[in-house]
Image 1 (cartoon, rainbow, N blue to C red):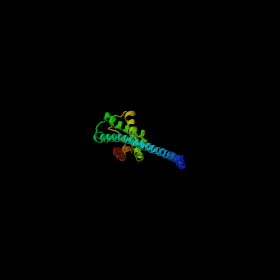
Image 2: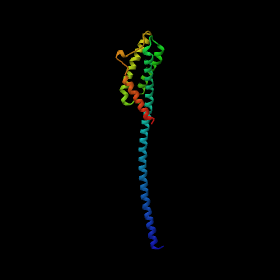
Image 3: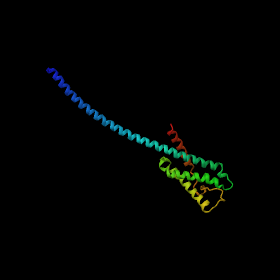
Image 4: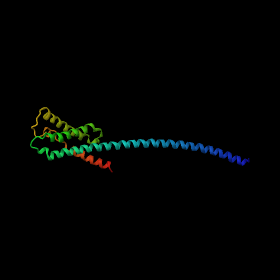
Length: 180
């Protein structure tokens, strides 16, 4: 073999060897960066998924509160405040159940509420706690079925209308945002 071919062959082997080493290091470096990017993407994806789930659960919670607040409002506007005699069925089926349901929803799902509604939730819970206590005292313990209806506003626990307004606004806002 001529000297020239030996040099070319040797040079090719050395160049190939160094090329292989450089390619190996670039490959390892690329794998490392891909691994870091994959971990970061997964972390962001988990965070985004968790936030989406929280918003979805919050909208479901606020939707239930919204419906029961409307139910109570309609009950007071259409019948409860206008009845001449005590109507136990109406009070038990509409007022009592909605008051209990909203109160229980807020207590059991406070973690799903947006922070700006926590104080308003506390006001609603307080109002319903007082109403339920007075209902229990009047209807269950005292067996007083002659009272027209139970109100706790005169006792210093008016219904927190601003809380109702803020809950409804937040529900509509979050619902629209979730369903874009």
